[in-house]
Length: 387
Image (spheres, one colour):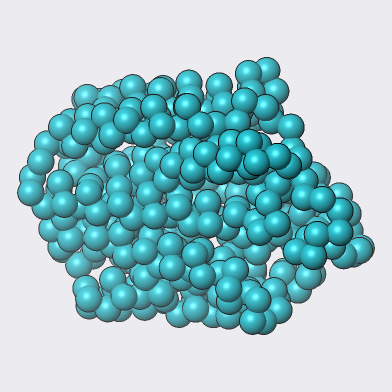
């Protein structure tokens, strides 16, 4: 590549990196304040579970539409206009005065977020293929950093009783500033230019017998549940089970996401010291221990530490599984099956946790454990089938 192209790619990489950061911050802007939103609307946990499940249906729709949208408009246009829509939609969460209004807003956010997510991953992958050293893990790490920053801001706002509408308006304004930088630097072409043949850093793709697509679908679903439990439901665990304040409850989300950041930014280095199978086995054990303590031990400081521990273990699950799917002889079908599995479980898991948590004999923590811990065991068992 020419020096001009290298400079353009470097600028594009910084723009895509900011897009990953912003997308992580979007969700983190409202999830830590879900208990407040629930109390404002006067609904129970079952209703919250139903609402999140129903809104997730549009995530499946967005996944189905994403290839058509990106092919029609390109990744740059999809990212720019998708982010503009997110900027408009985010403050509308605070304006929702009923469950139905909130459902419509969250559904629209999840639909648009999927489109932006697909587009930014395509640009990130294209840029990664142009470099001798890949960058995809670090880009996903920046998504987690955005989640941490957004979560800290959300928890701080809740602690100081800042109205939700002012908080989300401020977050949208910052996203608008970031979009100016992003839009001016993104690649205008989606054509991937791989590194030159013979690059000593290019990893060969090993031959391997194909694995049943159902295995990838199950792995996609089971990998999603522990991550969803640690992020979406940790504020309810702290507020409802341990009776913390809204601000302290939001810190649970931050603690888990901090662990995700640590794991994603260090995962490549750790993987270079051991086999991929060893890395995933250790990750499953760490995640299992962390979630067990966070869900079942009623001591707030230990819950925060355990959520961070769980985040470290869970952070490498999806990257490891996606890597395994990409090495399958039917890589496109394998990745499609894994994505379908993870998006399909969204329709079941939040509702199930909400129903379990509202049962008199169970707490939020026990409901989280019932859903998440068996999934980690399944991941550890099935990974041996694909690697």
